[in-house]
Length: 233
Image (cartoon, rainbow, N blue to C red; front, side, top):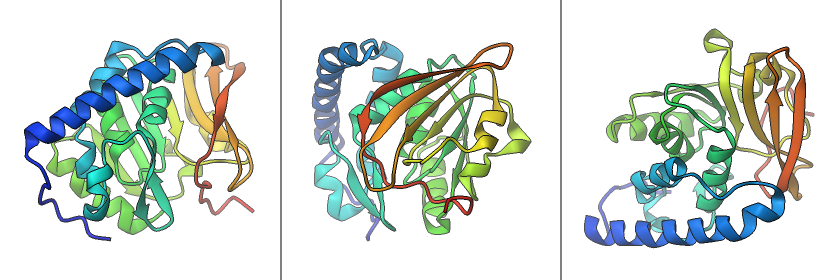
């Protein structure tokens, strides 16, 4: 896949497409979220989504579709998630400025950028070296210096920087990797799609109480590519 950055439209045209996407995502969230016990998206999340140029995170042959509310292929069997789902998962973390967030599965770096725009300090782990290198370069080029990317098995987390205020897993997992629960700080939130590979999963929110107890809430059915981990059968 090609990642050449020559724009097909001028920046005003991209901005108009992004504004239309934001309106669609906000409307969809207002209609759908209450049915699943989730509030409409916060202004912080919507503004974060608005500020990230999604067309810079997709291969050139997909760029004309960058502001459709749908996932797109980024190569290596991976996808950039649907913007509505990116916004929802970000919102479920209930971020505060300066929160430390672990992202499992950097992919192209789009979710990382949205988290950073929402005020988080992001530590992102990607198991595919090529994707990690491309995402790190892209994020640096766009000025997202509060995002750190490394190559590794995301199911192991990033213990050197734990505990985390939030953890987001951008791939479907059969179970929650134990290391992630250990690295989630008291009062923290973990968002993960749980279920079988290549099947419908349940987007799940786990809250860790101050005393360490866990509260689990199923949010809605989703479909993600499987989590790639050396610890997965």
